[in-house]
Amino acid sequence: MARLRAGEAASIVLLTATAMGLACCPITEPLEIAKTRDAVRAEVFGAGGYPQMLLRVGWAPINADPLPPTPRRELSQVVEWPEELLRQRC
Image (cartoon, rainbow, N blue to C red):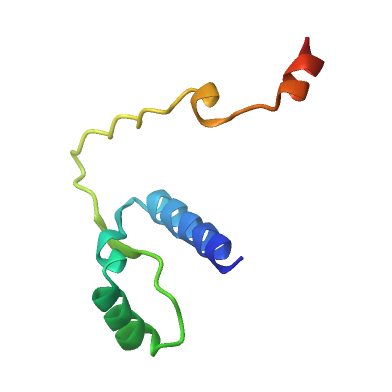
């Protein structure tokens, strides 16, 4: 449940920053290395938390072009429907 809450908190932070005109860059790769993750945990959280993401925040250039939308997969590529549910739809 804690990871779900962390994701919800990250979503709120990212949306709030965007609404304020800030640009964000979530960084998770360093936390995939145990030594780095443990160092962040000890030095930032006092060993009392579990870092899920680092976040770089700054002002976006005023004249920057908007980023293109990220491609999305079709629903059928990521969801498998049970056969009995598919039969009910017909």
